[in-house]
Length: 337
Image (cartoon, rainbow, N blue to C red):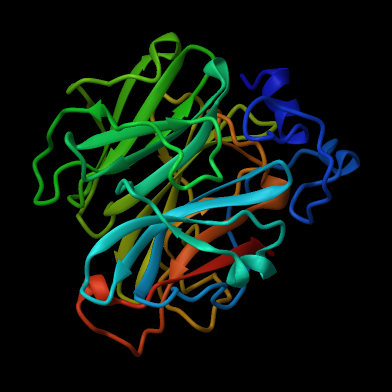
């Protein structure tokens, strides 16, 4: 069940600490009168798309792996970059209030690599958490009181120490909480999606090495970039998973009535996906890849509003095909039509 506090938090963006009354207008924050209406998730999805919203700064060739929240009336976006030698690093954008400002926002390199980040505000302990891969354990996390500061994060701590049977090992962690537990979902580039959990009072700390396999399919049909959200006004959770299709990367979706429960396919084919070439409306990219639904409530409930769905994703020119690390990914945004 979604608690009243979770429904009210989107109206109280954070001043990078505790919730405060919103003092800044933001075109992406839904007015109070509109929030009286609740929407169900559509059974089929159709989107419109922006073009590329930002280009990498000098010395970088790719911007990718985005995680995004709205707080204090501004978008806070973290991601990965790839330099001209094909090396990964981590970055954030300076805060901006509208997607049209992303191109001019600063691109700030992080001193600590946090590849494939997952950003949220952990309300029970009044801290920001960024979870990621490629660290001293398969997954790590860092914490901060100010998510706008790319280099204001704590030293890394282990988030998960287990292993899976794949060439990549565990990949693409995402976190979400209900009133009782925190859950870790992740992929393995191997056709499986995995889940671990802990009591919410123990978080942040390590989930240890134990996990459950909750979805299985072919590698291409359950590849990577899993994300999980609670659906505002509904007793429902939404999972999206990136897949490899004949026409590029796309997302399948699944739903459940509890985070510890069974996941049912929703929009689950390349021809009728959650988001992909078939329904994105994008003309500049075939790939709809490594996305995060925009959250005006930045807390651990990962609440999304089906009345106002937007997906921040990475896309690329399909006619430019260097080695994988050098693919020219750029940010774009889908808006539900």
